Length: 363
Ligand SMILES: [Zn+2]
Image (cartoon, protein in one colour):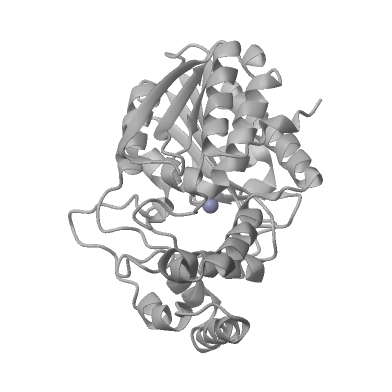
């Protein structure tokens, strides 16, 4: 039975449903408040942590949502769906599941991929006290992809610039420059920030508290927007041949390690990813971590959504009518309303989480 009411319309609704589901199915909730920021109706913001099973279990699965805020609507539904569809009742005694809900609550609440400082949280997990990685390719692209006006002629010029960079430097250099992460342009895209963000510290604390004791731990960081529609892809970053790489393959199949369905022609050498930080925070623990993406629109449409969102945040105030239209398209790109999309995400996410629980139980 699919209950699509788990797909929320607002952050406040998502949070209320998550806390209610935890309460009804024996989960304990710990909330970390993000003071000084609020949602669009003034609502308070939190990273909420829901713990199922024995909190001292030697094996812990973390399932996270909303690293990219607006992608948290689908991620929250996946979390609540698993809770309400028998997940907790089927947990083996030595496995706990920890849901981290709304990693980037400001972006979730306001419907943006980035956070309150325009930081892409999933590029922020780098050391911030020793200088940041340079990205000269992004610096070259930035003025060409951040127009003052958003119209079809301007969008064509933006995409021409991306294509020219790609032709000149190749797919890998393009991906690294465009979406690998940059630390120099605070009004740009895929900006990793110049300081540790609140969410970064809150997640480190939550993982330390709820996972630090474990012998084995895994993380599934739920995202949307890469890969084919109505399907999902895995973006794992364990080295081929490593034990973690083989665990991912054993749990989820070859698709977990062979980049099947990834619509990027070359996957960037990403900097500052949460799944990498998760493993770094747990040095004595046998860790397995992956990003799971539920595909929405084709790659050029997603690039357009990200770039239009950036324009909206920095230039949109002067164009309120156009801004409303673009914001609607932007939200739909990351959180499709179509029933069949939501059914697919609901069904597939349950299976992905169940497979990780079974894998941990065997390990
Ligand atoms: Zn994402």
